[in-house]
Structures are given as C-alpha cells and as structure tokens.
Image (cartoon, rainbow, N blue to C red; front, side, top):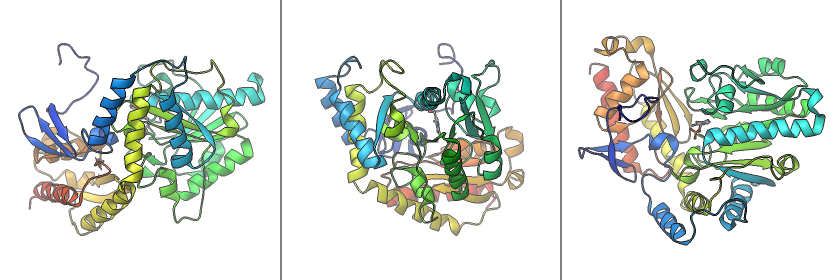
Length: 413
Ligand SMILES: *Cc1c(COP(=O)(O)O)cnc(C)c1O
C-alpha cells in the first residue's frame, strides 16, 4: 500500500477480509468486535441480508441511468426522507458523501440569499462552530472549525466564521445582515462527541427569525437513526421544552448503511433557490444507491432498531456508571454515538503511555484493538463507540467486558 496508495491516511495495522453483523475477520483470521462500524457508517452491521438482497436485486434491474431522466427510486427515497424522517414538507437531493452534502447546503444558503437580497447585499456568510467537522472538500474545510484540516490549502473559500460551540452570546455577536446561514452538528462527532445545548439551539432559531438566515444541521454522523430517532436534534431536544426545527439538513455516513451516499433536505419554502442547472452530481441518486438506502432506512424504521439504540445506550450507561477508573473521566453522547473521555493526567501514569508518543485516545484505541474491540478516536482524549444500530445485548455485554478489561489493565489492576 505504501508503494502504490497515496499516504494521506494514518492507518491502524490490520486489514479485514470479511464482515458479518458486528464482527470483522482480519486477513490473518482473527475475529474483532466492531464498535467503529466504518465510523458510524454500517448502521445495520457488516453485509446485512437486507442490503445484500437490495443490491443484488437492483443491480440486476438497473444500476445507473443519469439525472437526465426521471428516477423512480430517487422519488421513493425522497418521499421517505420527507414523510418518514423529517415529517415536514420539503425536498431532498442525493449525492455521494457528507462533504458533498454540506457543499450543497452552503450553495443553497448562498443562492437563496442572493436571489432574495441581491449580490450587493453581501449576504453570503456561513457561521459554523469551532471543533466542528464538515468534510474535506474545499467547502467542507472552509466550514470546518479545526485548523488541522486547513493547513497548506490556502486560499480557502471565503465567507465563513467559526464561533465557540454552545455559546449563545458569541453566536449572537457573530450574526449580522450578511449572514446567510448558521450550520452546526447537533452532536459534534470528530470534535469529541459534544452535544449541542437547548439554549444554543434556541438562540440559533431566534437569530434565524431575526436575520432571515437558514438554520442548517449537519447530521452526517448523528443522523439517520444513530441517536435513536431519525433526527438527532429531536433526540437532543427531547424533554428540554425547546422545539427547534432546521431549514435544511445534510446526511451521509450511515444513511445507506455503507453504500456511498449523501443527502440533503431543504424546507419547501427555500427549495426554489436550487432550480434546473444550479447543482448536480453524475452519480447522485442512482437507482442502485437509492434502492439500497431505501432498504436500509426501511429496516431501521421497521425493525425496532431505533428503540434498540435507546435501550443499548441505557445498558451501556448503566454499566459504565459502576466503573471507577482514574483514566476515565466521563461518558458523553447520545444514542449509540458515545464518547469515553480520558483523563490526560491519569493517562500519564499508565505504563508505556509516555514512551509511546501517542495521544491518549489512540493509545486506548490501540489497546482495545489488541484486545479484539474496534473503536474510533475523536480528538486527543475521546474514544468513540459507534456500534451498529441493531447491536444485541450479548454483543454490548461483550464490548463492555473487553473495554472494562482494557481500562483495568491500563490502571494496573
Ligand atoms: C464524516 C463527516 C463529514 C464528511 O463526510 P464524508 O462522507 O467523509 O465527506 C461531514 N460532517 C460530519 C459531521 C461528519 O461526521
């Protein structure tokens, strides 16, 4: 790989040959419990029957035909997004990744403001948050609130402001007549599993009304069932008394269970900004991609999967609440998007940690992998659990036992 594949990824030293449900087998034949799910992608686990069948059946009928023509599967998937997931009048657009979906949102916000207020208004600024992640395209890195994705790629796309997450007062200071949109993740994923507060949602919604801007949610990681509800923000706001709804939403990752697909939804009143010729994607919304997404989302909706997410979250929280490790300071997150926050100071006492030169998160992810459990680092001090949404009691119990064992060993017990 190092000879022929571009070296843009830091990779863990294992290659997988086969997957089934929550299990992966390496080329050497070792079995791993996969609580990374391809980073929140394999919502129903590896090679689920429903996907295998939908892929085979649709591939035999029609794989690709271009957006020059009507695409029945696109219409059916869009109806599912509008009626079942959003339950609000709107329109969907399909693409191939999360970054692309966010590029679509940014173009939508600018075009809508341009049409309504004119170019001279300068209403084209998109306000996003620090520690956010919105993808690796030029639009995505400009929107992302982390220096590390931007270094060396100047000149960046202008027109972005990054404000502290969950700070309503500074958000208000940042917004002006020139703001076309506010874009944030209801649950920040790559930034370390930070959940947006009801106060932050409420202030963003007030600013939307005062400044006639679009409120847009990046649900690429936290959407499509990961939180135990179709809409991550609704899970986050449940019980808070605040009911904030966005003007536009982006999805990808788990949306089609591992088939590469991104999507966006925009409320009907703003959809006209993206008329014929304004945007497009050769591969966006093929019959194959849409049929697979529909099968995956259908299974999530019908199979008691959303209820399972909440149930397994409670089981994990209950178990972890009884753990007492100095290296573990907190369990954060919503649904099956959970972050184990490591205590950097306590980690310094772990034998071998200082000499490893690794961040706490990578050190613990490595230890868990060696023990047979795959997890994902988020920033320097958070280890993410992103199991399939249909993970069983027994699989969760096994992951809890393995991870408990890893933290015990690191704590010298
Ligand atoms: C992963 C991610 C993206 C980027 O998705 P890609 O499919 O890698 O382009 C964007 N936003 C969020 C919140 C993500 O987690």
